[in-house]
Every structure is written in structure tokens, then in C-alpha cells.
Image (cartoon, rainbow over all chains, first blue to last red; front, side):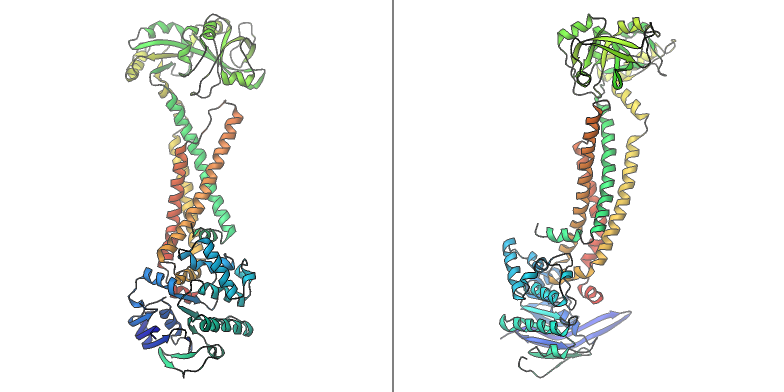
Length: 231
Length: 383
């Protein structure tokens, strides 16, 4: 089975002041379809940078990166945007919902980039909200929802376009324990039942325990934890 | 159209700011509409002036002797000459204003608007009735006058020989006209006027000359003025259009004032809207980054920002111009034709739409550019 994510010899540098700092050093990674990978590591280790590269938000300075069959390092900005719309769903730590839109309108946003009719979009949104258990909160604005509910809306938004890959950056970092458990259960179920490949950055070992594989990023290098069964 | 909801939501992100910006734009376009309306009305009044009709007056507004009439008639190129005097008056109440013009009954048509229509029998009756009066249809409607009425008109500055300011007329004709404004007028027989007035007998306020060829109007005007340059009553002659132009120029260079005021208002608007758009961009950096991460391209997002400004500016401009249109209609209706109605020609709406689009695009361009250049990674790292 070909890897959904394949990174080889990746180097990423940032300009900090007048200095170029190498954040990722000759990094290699392969993730298979349906895997739920947790990326752990201390702050500044480069795990979010790695996540940004996998999600097509940034490009490496060196190396080859293939995700969902596309050489991301060779795509233009607009090609990368179109690729993200087709293949990636993002879940952020602070939900990043549009405050002026209701839950259902937030979930609908990625579908605006498709050719689906209004009725089809509405049906898909209803299905996505049902999947995350928020059908009864469809017309609520983000400010009218709890943190856990907002993150569920964000997950519905990430899933609505049926992406190949779900990229989660500290999805439970702003939630209480109970809500965090709910969200992690949901992400795990999506990975197992809908065969979504999930890459999640987390500081929390309890969150990482939901993943099928945990990788550690330290000083720009990747160390593989022993593969283990799903929690 | 599928992005309209997103654009609308962006516009109303901060309702108070949007409402104030909307009102600022609306106010500027109300000003623009009113001033353009006044300007175009002045231009319209000038354009209705005929080029083949000359008006001769005294340079400082004194009456001119009627004795000059035969000399003007002899000037080559003049095909017809008539004259006009008159006084402002009112019927029963000062609010019922009646401009009275004393004219030569035999040449009355030259002093009337060119598109005037009057039955031949009524015109003939006017020519043979000393106290007869022709009134414009609008004046007749306004004062509820009809043919055969015997009406007293109180003169404001021309009393009769017996000291009475009241002039009585018999309505013998009612004429209609669409083109000239204002359309309030009562035409009386000059012979009745001159015989009954207390002073200034044998004089007129102005001569009206019809020239055979409009291209020779200036030369003929000069010839008329040359004829009387050394007389006791010198003249100033100009085309009807030139006369209107000179009269309106006395108000000032209206076009310059309009351009200056509207230009200042629009420049202020540009800064205000531009500042608001940039403020809105700064508040939404994280949202734009998220939209980009979802798959919105740089160009699409920049276009959405421009569309927000266009929606706001054109909406406010359209509302402003519509309000002006309603206001001018109401004022025109209330004046009853006493003053020339100020109208908004279609071209003002076109100019307004162009101005609104230009302001919107120019003011939103910096915000749109920044949105286009926004780095997702940097924006998400900061916000």
C-alpha cells in the first residue's frame, strides 16, 4: 500500500532576525492511509513546522514531499490552495471559526469552493453536523457554543469536503479533560471508521495515546516511538 | 453569488463601524447628488435658451425707450422684433405669486416658450382685448383660473395712475408648454400696461429679436449695440442662451464649487473607508489565514475583500442618490413650479456608480493586497 504522506530529506529554515535557523534537519517520514499519527515534542522542536509542511501550508527549503499523490514542493501557491481544498481538513487549537457565521455556515465554507448546489451543500452540512453530534446547534454562532462544541464544529468543517488527510494542531489544547476526551474519541472514530489519515500535534501524552503511532520531534529531528495498537 | 453570504458576513463583522461608514458614504453621495442636480439644472436652463433669439436690455437694468423699436427692425438679419415689460404680482395672497409680462399682442409668440401651444381663437381674442390675459396652464391650474374669469392681480412695484396697485384682467387664453421653466406667467397687453401705469411710459424692459440665421447672431447683437452706443439709452444684446449663461454666472463658477466640494468629500471618504478596511483586515488576519488553509486562493480572498468594499460603497451611494431623488421630487412637487425643478439626470447616477466603485476599489486595495500577501504560517503563529 503506497504511503499517503511521504517526506524525504526535508530541510526547513526560517529567518530569525538576520540569522537563518534550520528548524528541520534532513527529515524522513512515511504515513500510511488510515493511520492516526501523533507528533510530540517540546516547544520549538519543529513539530508545527512539520505539520504545516504535511498540510501544504508551507514548503520545504530542501527535500521532497509527496502527500495524497502530489509533489507539494513543486506546486505553485494557487495549486497548493486547490490541493488543500481537495485533500486536507484542518483542526486548530483555538478552533478558528468565523465568528460572524453560524455553525452550519462555518461548516459550509469549504464547500463554497466546490461546484455543489446550495441544496447539496445544505444536505452535506447537516450530515457533517450530525456526525459530530451538533445537529441541534446548527444555527448557533461560535460565541454561543462551548469550547468542545466549537471544536466539533471545526472538525465538521474539516471533514465536510471529504479530505484524504486530517491535520490537527493541538486540537484539545484549549479544552477541559472531559471535552478533550470526547474530541479525541471523535477523531479516532473518524480515522478508524472513515479511514481518514490523521496527523495530530500534541503536548499531551494522554491525547497521543489515542493515536496508532506516536512520533517525537526533537531539535528538528524525528525519532520513532515503538508502533503499538490503538488505545 | 455563492460567496455573497461570506461577503455580507464580512461587511457586518462590526455592525457599528459598518453603519457609521455606510452613513458617511451616504452623506457624501447625498451632497454629490444635490450639487450635481443643481449643476445639471443650471446647465439645462442654459441649454433651453435659444441661439437664434436675441435679448436687448440696458446694461445697468434701466428701461429702454420703445422708440428704439423701428431702428432695431431695420438692422439687417433681424427677422422679427418684439418687446416685454412687466411686474411681479400676486393673486389674493402673497403666496399666490403671479409674474406679469406686458407684451405686444401682435408678436406675443416670440416672447413665449418656443413649444407653446394655444388655440388660434384664444390668441385672436387676446389681440383684440385690452384687458385680456394669456396665462400658462400651470398658473391657471394653481390659481384655479379658467377662461372668462375676471381676475385682480396686486402689483408689487407698478401701481396704476389712480394709485391702485390692483390690475384686473380677463382670462382669454391658456397656453401649454413643456420645455421652459418656470412655467408660471401671465401675459398682458402692453398697451393696457403702458396706458395705465403711473410712470415709465413709453419704455420697455427688453427687446426680443428673432434672427434669420443663428450663426450671425453675435454680429447682429453687436450691430444693435453699436446702433445705440452713443445714444442716451445704450444697450447690451446677447443670445437668449448667452443671457441665461451670464445670469447664472453671476452666482459664481458653480461647476468649480461643485467639483471642489464633491472632490473634498470623496477624498475624505477614501481615507475613511481605506482606514476602516485596513482596520478590518488587521482584525481578521487569523480568519483570512484559516480561509486560505481551507483552500481559498490568494486571489479569491483579495477579491472578496474588494467585493466587501464595493458592496458597502455602492449600497450606500445608491441609497444616498435615491434619497436625493425622492427629496428633489418632493421639493419640486411642493414648489408648484415657482422655481425650476432640480432633477437628477441619469448620467448623475452613472457618475455616482463610477465614483462609488472607484472609492471602493481604491480604499480596499491596500487591505486586499495585504490579504493576498498574507502568509498562513505567520498569521496562524501570531494569532
